[in-house]
Image 1 (cartoon, helix red, strand yellow):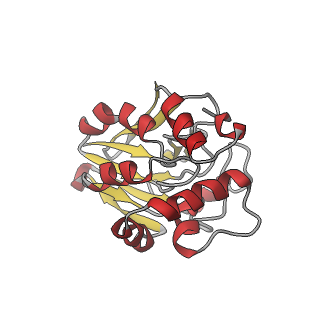
Image 2: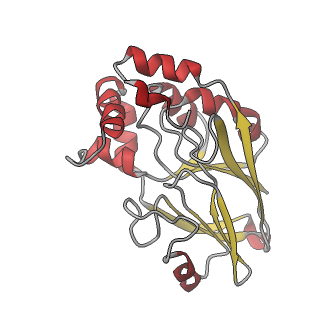
Length: 224
């Protein structure tokens, strides 16, 4: 069984389209949240995801839209949330609101693996950031899942702890280690799963152009 894991699409349909063949080539697609925020292809992204049988959890930007954006949010964050609030289809808003914050289960039958999904961390799904130097990473050893997948940082990360894999696939829509690449992870599901991190270039100019037309300032080019 092959699964592709996505995270942090952020209303960037140009980046998501770049991964279409990867998604179609997998038996299962998983998304770790942040479908919206920052950019302006809100309904296009949600139409694409919901037309497929994607296993999804909620991210912090999704939660900002459905539960309220904090006063301390940056201009870039507030721009994306305010834009989504104006244009999102009501059914998409309801769908985001009902997504779980965590998902744990077993994939691939008897020869598969156990999997835990979160956006930030298992302890604080919406708030934590597990960077490569995070003091929380070693604490993931307390969980017995074969694979723990998380997003939030927009930076890919793959580490092995006691023969268990801990994975951040990177960001589809706003990669922060390299501009204008759509990131994902392909997992070969088995009793000993293997992971391949992938990066596919895409044209970010349509994303920038739409955002500028909607009122974004020059900061919109950062990370694109």
